[in-house]
Image (tube, rainbow, N blue to C red; front, side, top):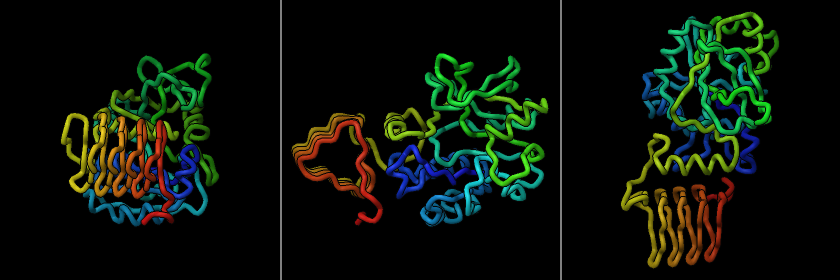
Length: 327
């Protein structure tokens, strides 16, 4: 199951008009990268829960056939929580082991390794975990030497953190997990289900990953996710070729004369950069964006279909056009 119902509140104002799974990483929605990841690991059937601006997601991805998947959707009239939305589609899983993965986090996790760890441990569930330098904005997990989960801390002060292993929101479960849900519609993994497992001494295990993971939990993390993808720190597909060292350009991108380009820079399909403009990387220019002449951009992501006026300076930011204003 792909989780796609969140509001993306920490990414506002962008997510007022764009659901978080549609936030672009090098011109492809985050959810697109996750679907590619699932298909690449042999998954065939995926269900996604939707709530905020669902038609944008459904219209873009359709039945999933472009990814070699069978994709269906579960609509939530009211948010059911991180776990409640999973229980709503329990019939989809039948009696099989199943994967739950965020549709709005950027990762190239080895799902096969996570799956194997789950079956080797023999518990009811296995959580993917990543060591982080600052746990204050994340939930962290304490493990026993054998990898069994012993406890959780939610967004601890760094001085009080008992672990630096962040919960990545990617899980493998046995169908018996639903026996530990409270009898109400809204259910959260961290506050409802996982504490019930610990209280009942039910086997729940952690799997530490070394691969890239970014929950895209803030605007700065969204920018960094684009820059990391451009640098090759996370393995994703995108529609541009490296024409010079650190300069990635789609065939239809147009650069006018007398530009100064300091890589790394990404130029999406149909984008146009005016004359005498300076691009001081990292810079990501989305598809069909326009940068007016004599502008200066550095440490910037320009969203698709966005026009930057001439003689504009943007440093360390995100430029975007509301969907209603797009041409």
